[in-house]
Image (tube, rainbow, N blue to C red):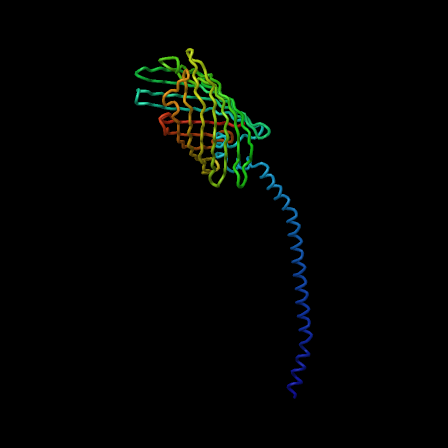
Length: 331
């Protein structure tokens, strides 16, 4: 009995300390809850401050996809401009000196032709998602046929074109760019009137319409185009020469190997109508011309890029090989 009274007395003595410990725990819990509430309020304030900025950035990226892509991969975009898959922004200019060398042979008549074609291309971005292009070529030609060799040089065929972006690229749809170009017969051509012919140009005025599609599937970009060309007939030595129309297909892919470098491959084929001289079709004039091209681009400086393409002829009507070196400078 005495032990029970002693235990009860000890319990009564401990009650104040126990009550004090419970009150202390309640106070600490209240402080933690208050601190948690302050942290939540701070997070909400930060979200209200940061979210509009993120939305603005996202809208800006959607409004200016060309600028964003140009910053992330300049070499790829510069190459796509040359493929007419991307247009220059309004107010931007590009001056491109280039050099094209082609070599053609035919064993049947000991024919060989080497042509060097330096040219100057000017591109300008216009409002309304449009662009204008002007090409001014100069041609050096050495031609040998049946033991006769001729050398010639002079201005080639001048081309003026305009392009417009009909549809911007979307998640499931490609971008579409249409172009219309006129080529003047400024290059000398005596193929139909001389035993020692010179072909610095086609000899015919040409109007060409084309449509180019582009689709990005990271890290690749696929592009393809269809073109229709109408060549106007001309008179040579009193005979009407009608070269007929032609249909061209070009498709390929480009790979971004880095911000300042890219690689691409393209296949180009052109189908011709028969050339008629005095209403009589020329034999084999409708043979297609096919070329496989491999190359790439590298950005040399903020304004200047280097683009190289090497092409191999796949049909008898195509050059054996063709090399194109371009140095586009942007302003």
